[in-house]
Image 1: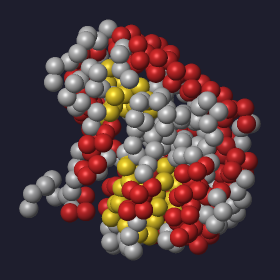
Image 2: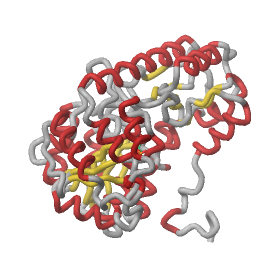
Image 3: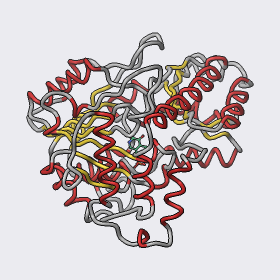
Image 4: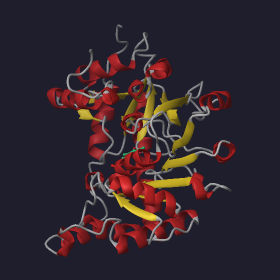
Length: 400
Ligand SMILES: *Cc1c(COP(=O)(O)O)cnc(C)c1O
């Protein structure tokens, strides 16, 4: 047998990630790390204070399996406030160890071996591994970058139609989308909703960037479209909204029968997590609308700083409509269009670390993302300024 020793056949191919390689390179070269997507500034004090005060109390012990009632109520109210959808905190809301566990538990709960999952790529790196752990099969639909670098990433309806087979049971959507920064449009969501209804698919939608949208773009949950609430599980997380990615408090909401299935898997993964963080996240979800608007504005400003810096360094940027990430086309400075090689040499050349977008594609579509690189801009003013200055000093064309 070939492959990684000891690793089960289900997980072959998921052995090492480029994130570890790039983070190690950042440390070794003293580079500014714009690879991993986590903020280097703290969350709102109203949220942090609640967690501090909860430590040393009964909140340190196992919370109830579905999450503390206060947090489940806050999640339901937050949904009502921002999407208009009502979920019953008693049996339609489940608190999880981050969005990652919500997604994995849902896939483990809902998929039988051989069941197919339609999703878009590039895709968040846990999706394919979680589908594999559940014994499912990924059917990727490529998102194509805007041809001239302006406008939106889009998908071909024929690609979508071709991905659906009689074995398809689930559609997995991520909007706003990592790594592209795309916000799926009303028209695209309508296409997806009618596909789900026509093929009687379950839908799992990852909306961890729901509040981090720019320029007046609007995030719409697929669950709000006609016929969708009853077949859709919506995943959210505190990490991205409140700058607390290490807390790993997420949630999943949907009709009681689906949430009950997810709970069955979840109770044997972590059972529960984040005792003192649960009341803190409840406080965060209860913050006024202005907090959420300000979080988006603040990040939009950081996006603008990085996008301008990248453009001035001679790198064409696809400016994102949402999320933490901007995408660069390396071809002007790297004629062979090898984004992975670009990222491997960037720490030496410029003292900056980024992630090659190719790692977010399955092997079959890797060519589509070969020339693209993802930079994170959820960083402090000083770090962004340093990165921009270093990129500006990058010398001319790199030989392939
Ligand atoms: C960060 C991220 C997650 C993981 O969220 P956690 O709450 O940290 O588990 C899931 N999906 C996407 C698209 C992300 O960017």
